[in-house]
Image (cartoon, rainbow, N blue to C red; front, side, top):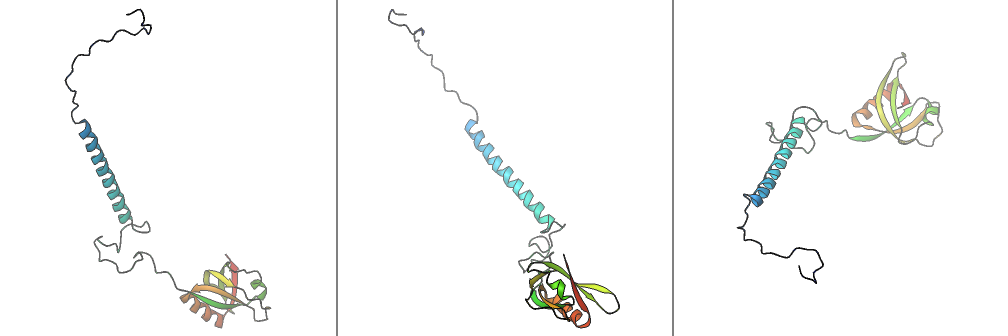
Amino acid sequence: MGAGDRSGAPPTCPVPHFAPLRVRGGRHQLHRLLRHRRRAVAVGLAVTAAALVAAGPDGSAGARGHPGAGGPPTTTARPAGRPRPAEMVTAPVRIADGAAARLLRPGDRVDVIAADGGGSARVVAPGVRVIRVPDVEPTESGALVVLSVPRATAARLAGAGATSRLAVTLC
């Protein structure tokens, strides 16, 4: 140490020569790990997709109608296990109790009940939506209510309205 050196550090000395240090597969192991990780993720996705196809579109067992699932391919875009959505029509219905029509608002869900003269009643249209309640004073023959119903239900309503008195209950 010299008189002017006050840092307290030891003097420098030469560093011996070392051969290059080579780690086996260091960089290649990283690439292999990434390659296997991608493969593991791909396998996981494939297994998940297969499980979803096997479960079916609505959670039921079997993938009926799925192309490549052993059956003939489907020609429609909707899943084969689900029924086709019913075509909705607007049906005017005269209910027997005109005062009950005043309680209804557009958007309400109602059950339409047909009561025949013998005291028996049956639900003709369950859970149908009220579209409109015309602003007409109720008469002795009842009041008009406009409902949105499937086409088949509209036919049942028309038949029941001709032979029975119709009533509604709020759902």
